Length: 90
Image 1 (cartoon, rainbow, N blue to C red):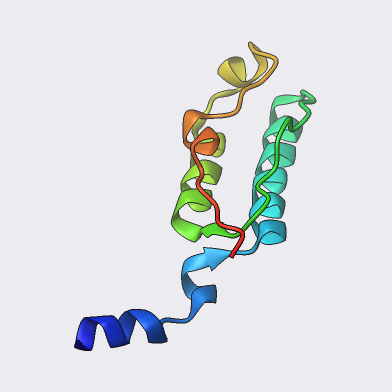
Image 2 (image 1 turned 135 degrees about the vertical axis):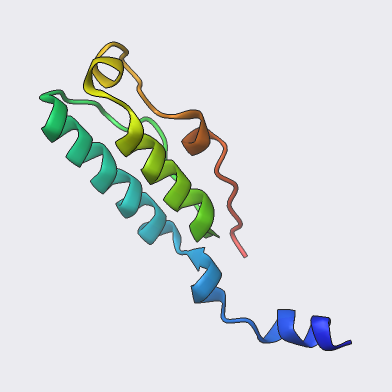
């Protein structure tokens, strides 16, 4: 019973980014990587609901982890960890 109480009292904002926050974090990472690597990429998707901060943060880390030759060698350099971000519209 105590665990259920803790789960229901947990502040949503400590675990989740809103749709706008998620998309902004990923956009900033793409823009920074493009600026560093001298390239331009268009984002082809967006997150339409709130998502776990951990998932978005892992996506951003994966973007920064790519080296410039890998980043510039493809038209869509989106890391797999970004493609698998789950979201909820609740």
